[in-house]
Amino acid sequence: MRRRKDHRVYVGKPSILAYDSSCTTIETRAVPQTRSPVDALLYFCNMSSHSTHPAITPVQAPGQSPAHLGQKPGLLSASQIEQPVTILDTFPNPRPARDYQIKFVFPEFTSICPVTGQPDFATITVSYTPDQKCVEMKSLKLYFLAYRNKGIFYEGVVNTILDDLVFKLSPRHMTVVGEFNARGGTVGVITATHSS
Image 1 (spheres, rainbow, N blue to C red):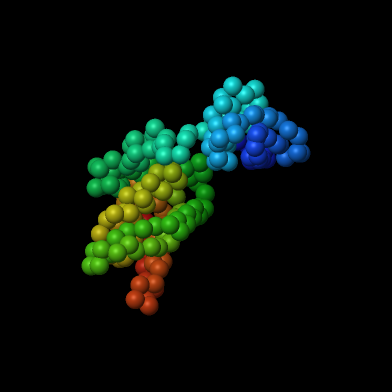
Image 2 (cartoon, helix red, strand yellow):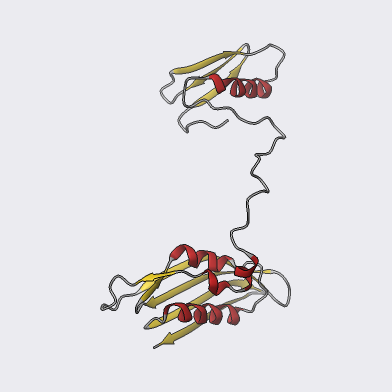
């Protein structure tokens, strides 16, 4: 049942009571005696579409899926996954006369080991001093997601990320560090740097 976090619903025959956080009854409904507690709760919720209280909303019966499940298009197109650099968006540097550092840490990076086919997990850190352009953070997140099913070595990941970001931003300085989780008892840390 979808309802505000501070509300509670109690099932009891022959009625169901919905309480708010101050234990004030907000709604009572009679339930047919033949219903189990779960059926009674569903009956209450589905009958509550006529309720005047904002905390009471109808729910779907068990076994029914929301209509949108499986229908949502993917976040990235096939061409974006093939060429992740096309995902990156930029915006003008608000202080181009000043040297300052921007740092993004992405702890949920995933790619595929091209030898074993197993997932590689890493924390990718991008630090740079912008010149005329900055990278937009959501596009950077989506860019990282494009690697989720790519078979690529650690060194390829870090150097490709650096090359793509340098191509898009032309920063004064940039460092990309990939800290890959242990595989076979060994942790891989790859660092690639660019200076203009």
